[in-house]
Amino acid sequence: MAIAREQTQAPLLLSVLFILLFLLQFGYSLAAAEKENSSNPSVSWSMGRDKNDLRKGSESTESLEEDGDEFTGGFSTLDSMLQWAIGHSDPAKLKEKAEYTEKLSPEEILSKQSEIKELMEKLKMPSDAELMKIAIADLNNSSSSTQERLHALNELLVLVEPIDNALDMDKLGGLEAVIKELEDIESEIRTASAWVLGKASQNNVVVQDQVLGYGALTRLMKMVQSSYTEEAVKAFYAISALIRNNERGQELFYLEGGDVLLQDMLTNSSIDIRLQKKVVFLVADLADYQATTSANDKNNNHMLSLLSDRVSLKSVVDLSVKRDLDLQEKVLMAVRSLLHLAPTEARDLKEFCGLDQVLERMRVQLEDLASDEDIGDFVRDLETLRREVQSLFHQKLDQATKSPQ
Image (cartoon, rainbow, N blue to C red; front, top):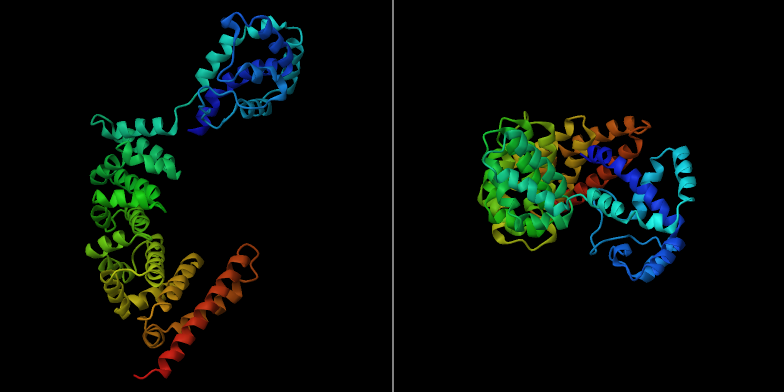
């Protein structure tokens, strides 16, 4: 979309460039001409700036903004637009145009007033809020085709990334419109909707609470079990974004059977590796939150039930067998986080999960990969993490050995 806009704007920008060159090269003449014609309002071109600003001519590079509105579409000021246009123009033609402008009188320069205003109006792109309204209207329009709704969701996916835009979504009716799409018969629409909700909720407690308030979590948890891999991955991404560092979100997650869902997913070796990574990462995140906050007793109990399941614990450790360094990193992070929790049994990790052997096998693998120029730095960082986990594990194992049975 950005490329299309650039292509559309290029001819207009080049036209404005030549006019701007007039103004930059003949600022003094422009000011003089304005002074001579100050009694005639038709030649006053302030665009929100007073006459003192105009008299600065080429000495001023402030933006020429009307009513404080910034240019959108990548140009916040006329100066930045000028620089872009210069960089995308033929130097020979620019020189020719510059020579032409030297022959113009101040009156001829001022006559460009209406042309400048017209071109500037054409260059103005809709604001993010306006684009969001258009996309939301398409979602709410019952006659919109699947492709039109998918396009609207893809637009929102980009627009909600800035926190301020995400905060505006509910005010514009966007959250309800997107959540409604989670029920669509098309997997592609459901997937895109979950992705938008996850993106908007990420690290944004206000949006998290708003989405949770609409009851979207229940639907997302059902979508995780979809036979469509992409839908399951994006739904789990949205769930993680909704409950991360959000006690209320975690409480609702557990009330919906979130601990059972995690156990099922951890023990299911056939699920997509991207989903496995997200599950293990969420386990680490929930454990970290549990260790650093005074979460309520209900959440504690649910987390304890997850940790007391030795099969689930072993499933986390066993994922390190896969020769995917990113997954191995997430497994190490999860084990480290779990070791920080008092209820985690070091004996189970040793005797039932075979963590010692897993860490040694990983050490050998990383040693072999350390000389690889492409991934050497990452491998060394991973080895540092592995050593940290091994040290923490042995410390906890020693404590368990010294404590009474």
